[in-house]
Each structure stands twice: as structure tokens, then as C-alpha cells.
Length: 342
Ligand code: BGC
Image (tube, rainbow, N blue to C red; front, side, top):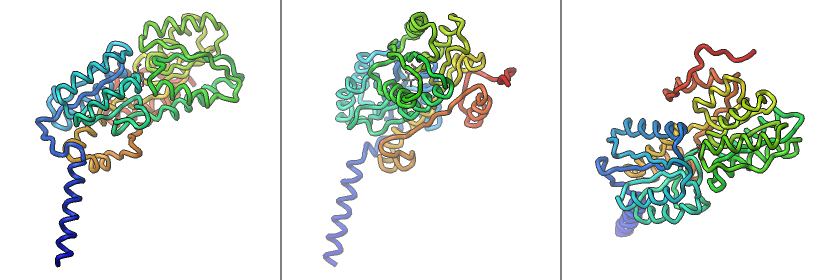
């Protein structure tokens, strides 16, 4: 009997410790506040924001309980400053897309030490980060897919330009690496990536100058959401549609228009609406149910929720639209009145 009660005490103590170690299990709904910090003003990030708003609505949160913020262009200092502001407010959780994961880690650590739930989205944190979960694309794999498509488009090889919006964000670096690995050993010669720091006007200038320095450019790879459209404009202006093949990322309206026009051959669409939605949902579940239950319910595997990608070409665009509609994911473009070329 005595042994049984000792055992019971031990079990109860362990259970109490486990619950205490679990994150903010007791946050009341009305005290909850989550902040999602993105990387730049762009329709891609507006889609993330739509996901944030939809999750807040589904969870019964007020607008001011789910904040979304982005700087105009890549701005590491502004991301750090915004983190500081919300740490001082003592919010429940922060989900951030770190434009420079090394530079952001100390302030993310400060947030975690203050008891704030810290997660990342869209672009991963450093190895061993305090970020509990990364929600987004497997960027290396997605870049590899883009490289495979380019290799199929260019069986004869040739020079390929690479435009990207960051030299520090891991999503840009991993996509580039995946792409380079996929084209290795083919006749494709990648040029040095050009960096516009998430400035769309600069992206266009750079695309124009790469094209005028390489008038025989066989292909172009757009790493970030506005890089595809920047290349598309440059390719059209240079009269090279169909001669410079274009593979890019994302599925904002300008990219879909590029596919419909035939200037963009393929794009790797991310699921950014889900990144925003799931960031809010995960932090809410951690705060109200505890980390273990939240991870189980949300399917966190190895500290990640892989949101997946969709490859879109003219041949698959209509199916992609139907899939978005079936999931109730909003999009500003339509394929109505358009048919893929035979
Ligand atoms: C990337 C984001 C980036 C956005 C707009 C997307 O492809 O995942 O990190 O901020 O493009 O530049």
C-alpha cells in the first residue's frame, strides 16, 4: 500500500512537472495575442495575411489579437525592432520569417526567454534555433524541382540567369542550391545570382542588365515571387519570349498572367495562405492546449510543418485553380475565357 502511494506521488509530480514545462498551457482566450512578421510588401505576403485573418476568424479572435506586419522591402533591422516592440508588450506568440536567421536569432531567443512562443514561417531559422516549429516549403526540394524543369526545357543547355531577393534568407539560399544541384551535369551554365533585396524595381533593373549582358540567355530562374514577373518583363522587352525559358516561384496574379501569355514556362507555387493560417493555429493551440497536444494535432514532424508546393504550367493551370477553389483559398486571377495552347 505504502509503495503504491509513493508511486502515485512520483507519477503525479512527474505529470505536474511535464505540464509546467509545456508552453503557456493556461493562456485564456481573451489574453491571447499573436504577431506574424513577414519580409516585404508584396501580394505573396498579402496571401499570408489572408491566412492569418482566416485563422483568427475561425478561432474566434478579435482583429487586434492577430497582428500581421511586413517591412516595405528586405529589412533585417526593422524585423528586429518589431520583435522588440512585441516582446515589450508581452504577446503570447510570434511567428517570424527571418530575412537573416543569424541576425534574428538573438532577439528570437530573448522572446523565448520572456515566455513568448516563437515559431518561423516561409524561411527557416538557424540550426538549433529557439523557433519551436518551421511552417513552410521544403525550399531545397522545391528549388531542385525548378532545376529539373529547367533541365527539361533546355536539353541543349545554355546560360541561365538567377534573380533572387536575399543573400541571407535561408529560403533563397536553399532554393538556389537545390536548383544548382538539379542542373549539375547538364549542359546548363548558371550565372552568378543577382540580389535585389526584395525590391521589385531593382529586380527588373537587374533582369534587364543580365539579359543585355547575355543576349543569348537560354533560361532564367526567378527565386522570389516578384523575380518571375521581373524576368518576364525583361524577356518580353528584349523580344525573347520562347527563346529565354523562364521558371519561377509562386502564383500571384502577375505570374499566372505570365503563364497564360506563354512567357513563364513553369512556376513552383507555394502555399503561403496555409503558412499564415497554420502559424496562428499552431501558436493558439500551444497556448491553450499545450505543446504536445498542439504538435500532435497539427502534425509537426521534426520541428516542421511542410506546407507543400504545386507545380503550375499552362497545361495544369486550370486544375490548379479548381484545387484552390475546392479548398476555399481566395485568388484574384481567373482562367475564365482562357484555354491552354494545344
Ligand atoms: C518567398 C518570400 C519572399 C516573397 C516575396 C517568396 O517566394 O518565399 O520569402 O518574401 O517571395 O519576395
